[in-house]
Image (cartoon, rainbow, N blue to C red; front, side, top):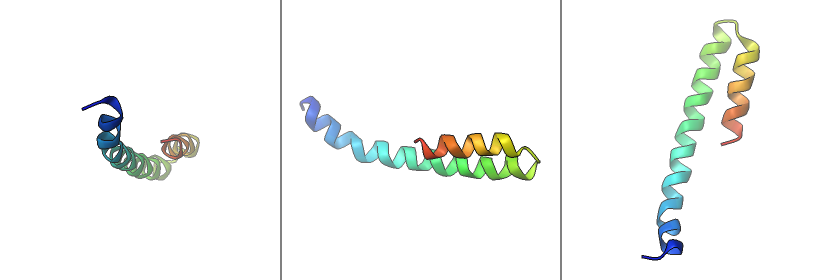
Length: 51
């Protein structure tokens, strides 16, 4: 398997993996926001958008 074939096989996994991380970041942003840490929540939400 050459690098292009490997990348083609790995890309769907990477996309799913990053989507799962983004969802987890959003959950934590809400928890942090509920604890009164609005600035931290915004930073976590921003990190999720950058995935």
